[in-house]
Length: 41
Image (tube, rainbow, N blue to C red; front, top):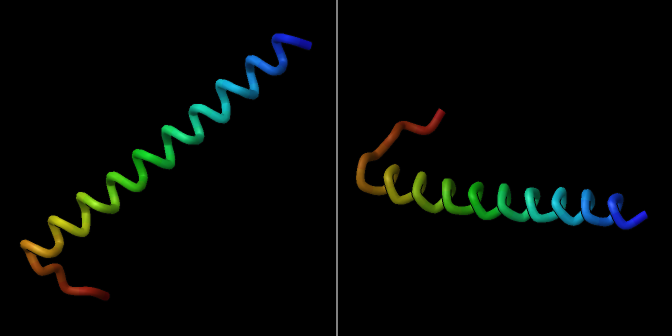
C-alpha cells in the first residue's frame, strides 16, 4: 500500500540520518583524541 511505502521511506531516511550522525561523531571524536591524547586500551 501507499502508506507502507511512506513508512519504509521514512525508515530509510532515518537510517541515513543516523549514519551521517555516526560519521560526524567519528570525525569529531578523532579530532578530539588527536588534540588530547587518550591512552588506547
